[in-house]
Image (cartoon, rainbow over all chains, first blue to last red; front, side):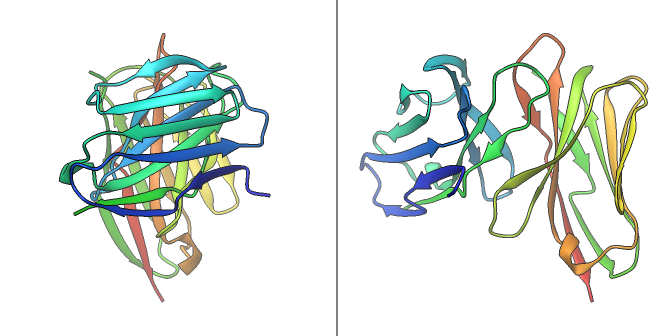
Length: 114
Length: 111
């Protein structure tokens, strides 16, 4: 069983559309994250939730809204998609938000906005 | 804000040669982690360093944390084609819960 799974793996959509990416972890972890990796491979944290509570909210356009229905799930909804949103989005989880805990990443969702 | 830079950005080596990537933070770090991302894959945790001057080894990989806890390095001895990928450091600034990923070093190993 995959520890951190994201769906879909690929997403091609037109500008202006709204889309969601889902993430689930079966590791029993308390903390989940969304990262964005651009075409230059830079990895930037977007959001983090700890036990369904938002603890990290980077400077991200408010078109991006995370939702955590329970601590095993963290979804990302994006409104009014723009060309610049094209990237690979990674979900990750860690046991707690305590320092020094490794993160487990999902396989990534490659979003292409046309 | 905190920045974590890595050099070089790219490195091509012949199989069997050594490789080093350097990670430099603009602020003092509580600890630093290293991840490897294979082409088309996702980042995978390699190791974590916590103490000033700490050195850890994993087979052909040697990780070092600087005395001032603002820099780190990853050295691979006698590279193999399986070492291909992008290596990221991720630094945790003191007093925060947020790891900032470095800019990454893409390694290509030529057989």
